[in-house]
Amino acid sequence: MLFQKSLLRELRSTSGGVLAVLLTTLVTMILIRALGRAASGRVDGELVVPLIVFNTLNLMSTVLMLTVYISVFMVLSRWWRDSEMVIWLSSGKSLADFLKPVWRFMWPMILLVALMSTLVAPWSKQQIAAFEDEIQNRSDAQRVSPGQFRESYSGQRVFFLENPDDEGGRTGAVFIRSIDANGRQSVLVSSTGKFEKDLEGQQWIVLERGYRTDLMPGYWETQTTGFEVYRFRVDHAARGVKSEETIRSAPTLTLFERTEPVAQGELALRVGLPLLTLGLGFLAIPLAVTQVRSGRAVNLLLALLIYLIASNLFSALTATVTQGRLSFEMAWWPLPTLLLAITAAMMWWRMR
Image 1 (tube, rainbow, N blue to C red):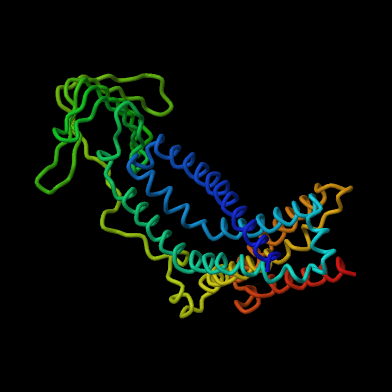
Image 2: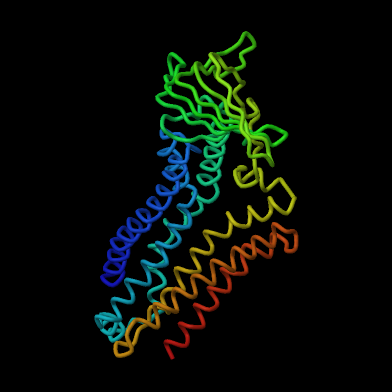
């Protein structure tokens, strides 16, 4: 009883620290990417936090799986390094006695992985897709930010506006570079401008007191024209068109009803992650066996190598199902079963 309590207590405390480190690393990486998109104008600043939250939830199943694997390996490695394991083995314990407390530590985490992979991750992907739709369904006027260059949805214009007024629709100085269907480049500069809507709801940019410079392709001559008022239509993305429900964001129960390879591959991924967590958690027990004189470097490298091989092999199996070259039944259980078989073989070899 004392043996199991001490092991469980240390596993749970270690897993909290490991989870905090992994989450911090993950959120930092997502934050950097989201801030990069916001700085380039592809995402509004107010959408950065929701995107970070939903992307983090999407990857939580992998984070929890890594937490289980690293926690078991770290705790048992420390026991071997500090000769604490020698005391327990001398008292009649064996590596097989570690299976029960490790399982008691793992099963709530495995349930969380299953919950994240089958329910939370698809829901978070739906929310991310909804935000992407909202971003894509904005007009050029809504995308303009003061002091930053913005490209239109058509890719034919680049805007630079000073101090856009969201309420009045007026701006400071305006710079616009455009290319027409014939390849002619035009640069428009005005001291002021404003956004207007016509009776049909179409939005226009009205430039006041400026110049237009045209350059034909293949010619060095330019033509400059002054104007008092210049109007052109604002590009819009296709409004009201939502992206279709993708396989990756489809509910898990829906995937069971679909027979196409893409759906079967996604289903194998969601079902296989909890089992992969189980296999890696038990495999960490014999991997942590360390000879005090030889150090931990070999075990650390071996543990890292096995995780990389297992995760990449699992991804390859699910991708093969997606391509229609492997059935669903042969993708989600063979790898976890192989890991459990390797665990049994290594424990038998260690206990000889």
